Image (cartoon, rainbow, N blue to C red; front, side, top):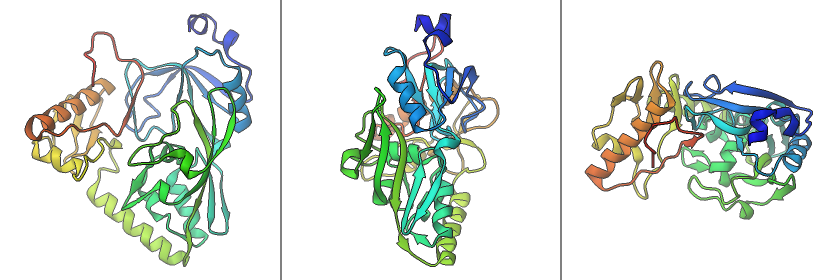
Length: 310
């Protein structure tokens, strides 16, 4: 890491994609908050990513960041190299009832491509923020369906640059869980739906969008659902019972519309958002004995002098 700080280009592998140094990530995350990346790398394609992973210094930290929809980048920023999968990973192809999507493809675009092709069963993806890669990593779901319900196979690059074809049993998907090691980077997946009239599929997606807009703060600066649902319970109900709806810390606020969402109402820092989330967890445990688990991924370095969040 010392060599990276002294002369980044001397230790970083040659790539066909691009490097950016000291990249401001607050303009990238949906919260519009957080620190900077020491190095931001956008690989050109899967081969470029694999070559980078194979030739990078073994002690170089690597973080994968999608479109920043379900993540909180701490104000201290991200050490090492942050990888963002861009256009080279955003292709969507229809193969009969199957949809092949790059890990950088937006879930909403996958849903729309399926609908246009008359493929039903993937409508729920219109309500999943982020990319196919992120959905793979957390087994994202909405409206009683999860990614594992439609997954046929996936591809991933391991920390040494090896490329792997993975079947569903290799992913070990559970509720907001994936068994593939964190160091592996998903690059591609194949989903399967059912034949259906495009008009009917579009209509179902419209219903889902209407429900989301009515019940969630989709037009505000938020990171999506903040906490996982405890077994047999709804996270938002425990938060509401703890009296946290509308709770604030600076410009960070628990949404009035849906209290399992944190919102940046102005110039909230990532620290304020995380501390507000921890206060919600404390109050829920104090009043109901329930330990909420974060669903939003919290990444990076904490600013000096701040207490450690659990």
